[in-house]
Length: 80
Picture 1 (cartoon, rainbow, N blue to C red):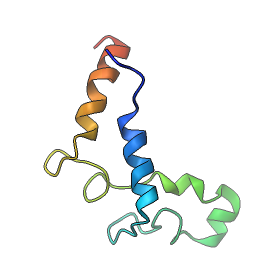
Picture 2: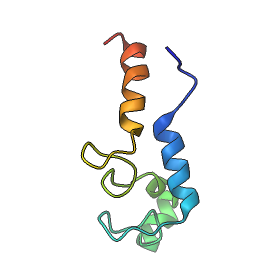
Picture 3: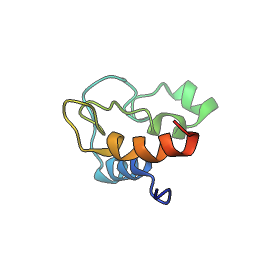
């Protein structure tokens, strides 16, 4: 089993690189809509990975295949 790929991380990076601004929850829009008081304490990076699978990365009904690609290596890694 190939454990050298990280499909979810790669999809997340591609999502960030695309510069899309989602109009779905969560409302902080990968830190662009976060309360400045919160980003002052936590920084904006904490919000960058908080994207919905639906209309963002992947889900079971509108699949880009990223979740499925990640499931096999993860199951193998934990012996499932």
